[in-house]
Image (tube, rainbow, N blue to C red; front, side, top):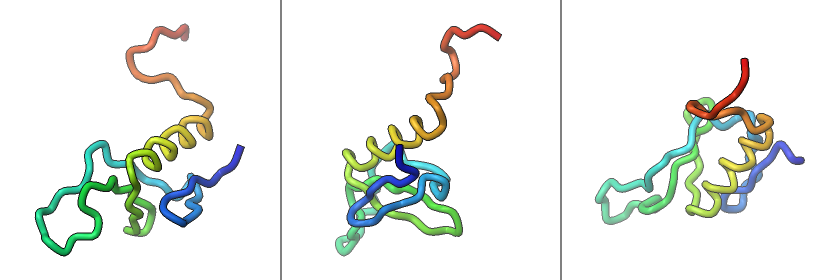
Length: 78
């Protein structure tokens, strides 16, 4: 298992990811280079922009890295 995921041509350490957008970016600016991509926010105010496949791979890598934590509502024994 790697602690990195690849977004565009960058190898991002999973521990730097703060959050991952659920919906694609839309600002309406004609010169926007991130239109339709998903923001992956990193620490220190940085961000990378991912295609849907890269976003999904990053989320899966985070889940594997954290050991498949239970999601709210799943049945589990305390």
